[in-house]
Amino acid sequence: MLAQLLILSGIVINGMGTLSYVLGTLQGKIKPNKVTFFIWSIAPFITFLAQVSQHVGFQALMTLSVSMFPLSVFIASFFNKRAYWRLNIRDLTCGLLAMIGLVLWYVTKVGNVAIILSLISEGLATFPTGIKAYYHPRTEQAWPWLASTISGVLTLITITTWNFANYAFPLFYSFEMFVLFVFVQFELVRLVSRE
Image 1 (tube, rainbow, N blue to C red):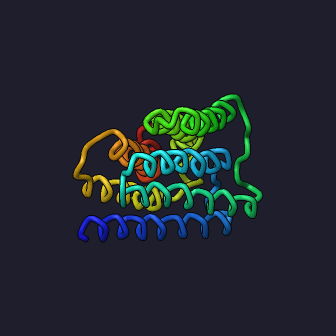
Image 2 (cartoon, rainbow, N blue to C red; image 1 turned 90 degrees about the vertical axis):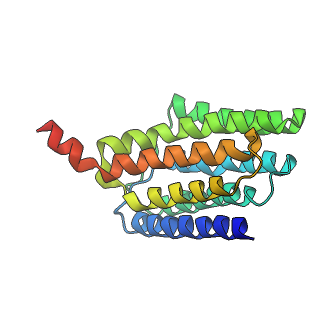
């Protein structure tokens, strides 16, 4: 019961961060990379399907939420004329890997293959937003990335069976969200060091 409460708390915290990010996007304060958020809505969904096939349990809900929340940002980005939409070879590669992950999972029924490919896709999709967050942190908001990190960490705390299907996505997700948080939150350190 405590594990489920922690996971649900993490999902709610992440949802609040996402709502803040969506509102910032609609107001034009945040400029999300559409390609990143589109792929972030696909890759975790592949992982979610693979986790369900491997009977991961309640922790898979966090992965499903991590798929749905970026989808809301992706949709909101169409109402922000300044949102980035730059389709390049890296973005196409990410999308292709996400699709290959889904096909391989369906054909092979090997969930870990889908999880690995979706993690690669998720990581590659993070690059455009990571680069933007590092060089243009004022086009982002820090606390939603921290909320996402907390969600991942709370899910990690609940894991009792440490196998790849259970820990791979929340661990990777926590790490990548924390890196984005640091890039945005500590922009002043970089600005001062440049002077």
